[in-house]
Amino acid sequence: MFAADAHAAGAEPSMVDTVGQLIIGALPTSFLFIALVLCYQFLVQKPLSRVLEERRARTEGAVEDAHRAVAKAEARAAEYANKLRQARAEIFKIREQRIQQWNAERDAVLDEARKAAAQKVGQAKAELESEAAGARQSIQASSAELARQVVRAVLPLAAGSTR
Image (cartoon, rainbow, N blue to C red; front, side, top):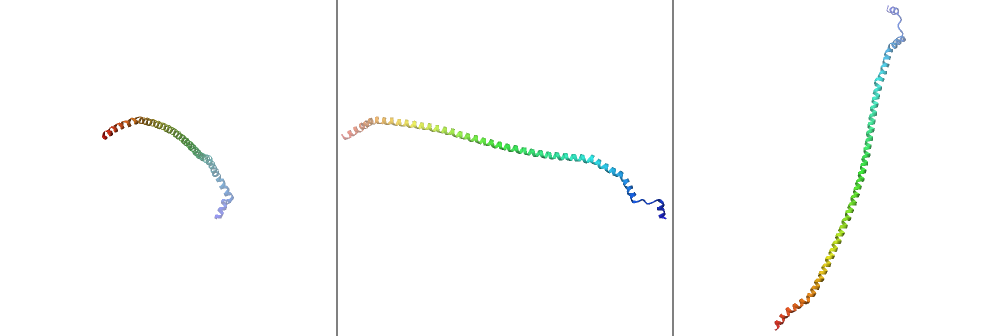
């Protein structure tokens, strides 16, 4: 009886018909899925990719700028160190020149002082020699007078004691 009912109701659909019906039923879903993927691509993926690329470019640019700034700062520091070294060398050279100049001036002043002292010593020796010569002449001139006075003072006493 069941077999008769099945035959009476119609023939059982074939597998090809069933698959065809499923594909036809899935077409609207497939179109919606493709439309959703395309909308995602245009509305989300592309702007997100663009923003991420810009961020990466800005980050790389900032890193490159930082590297350039560091290199520039190092170059300036080296330049300043070189200028400082040159300035110190210049100062040392000027200092050495001044010390040499001061030593030369001091030596000249000392030489003048020595010459002046030698001249004064020479003058003092000459005056002393002159005074000594004058004193010798004075002593020689007065020595005869002194000898007579001594003889007069000594002889009358000696003559009086022998009497």
